[in-house]
Amino acid sequence: MQSSAASIPATAQVADLERHRQSAQLIEALSPGSFVTLRNQPPDLPPFQLIQCRGGRCWVRQQSWGAMVQWEVAHRQLRVLA
Figure 1: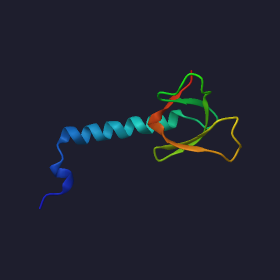
Figure 2: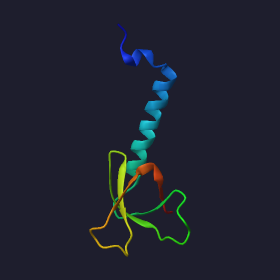
Figure 3: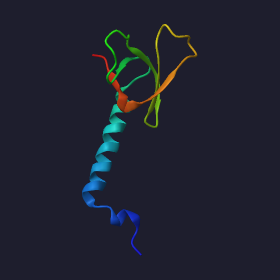
Figure 4: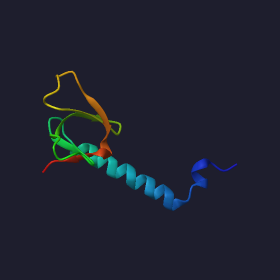
């Protein structure tokens, strides 16, 4: 019997590895305390402060929110401010 990995085309496996590598680089590039925006964020909404990222998920907050109020979002939804 063939393993499930053997049944996946090699190009799909390479694409999955590339996506994983890019995700890992993105998470490393986001440091706690930096300011980020969300994809399709309205221009009148201020940037979010990044609290932490783990396992493809990030926690952000608005400075006007209480210190214990956080929002969990997918890291791919975030854009780093320049």
